[in-house]
Length: 190
Image (cartoon, rainbow, N blue to C red; front, side, top):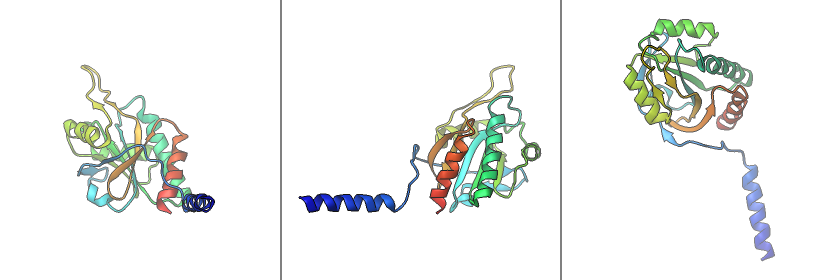
């Protein structure tokens, strides 16, 4: 019995020492998509297959949560460069009628986004992005109330694995969450 307990302890210790894993808090697949980037090119789920990526939902006219969210995404991009972590950032516009590729490009420049690994997407109608956000990411998107231009949307960042599965949700408005994403990317990419 004593030998069995020692064997169990050694096995458990060995497995725990083999490496960390990401503490997942979501499970779902991203629906297939093919949308337009800030450069008037297409980006699809197939283009992202084989790499880790982080997604969020924003819009350029937003006067509240998108400001800290996009600042945090820019900070995340800088931290990824410092740590030499190769992942793609994808910001889906929830106001595609206003957010043309040109508007998104100007918005990206405002945040000094490096567009080599950060894509801002549009080129669909509102109902498409509402369904896409709700079905794939379990994140609400609602049209603005009458007489308003502020779309209601979730504020999470989402970690998507190379198979197109969403495995983790983070708060996109809290700066300290970017460090958690960096830690998870280190685990994922090593």
